[in-house]
Image (tube, one colour):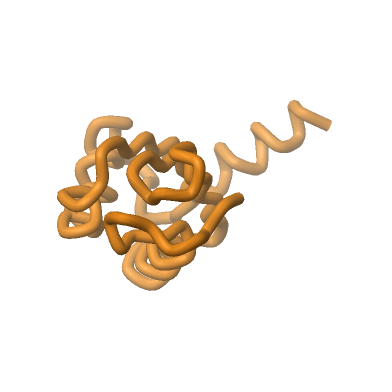
Length: 94
């Protein structure tokens, strides 16, 4: 997971900090897919705030929390799970 200085000023660590703090996320995995320039990120976000929300509502919630950061980067691709969904997904991988 690259987290070097980026042209956008956005880093994987800064995104993780915001999501953990503002969404109460229990698990956040951010990957810089741009080779370290900070322009394209993929994320896995696990938060109880996603409970009873559609996928679209989850993405809107994440995007509202990261409004300024998303405006500064080229591409953002989140995958949003409730803690229960994440546990099930991890159990299926084992």
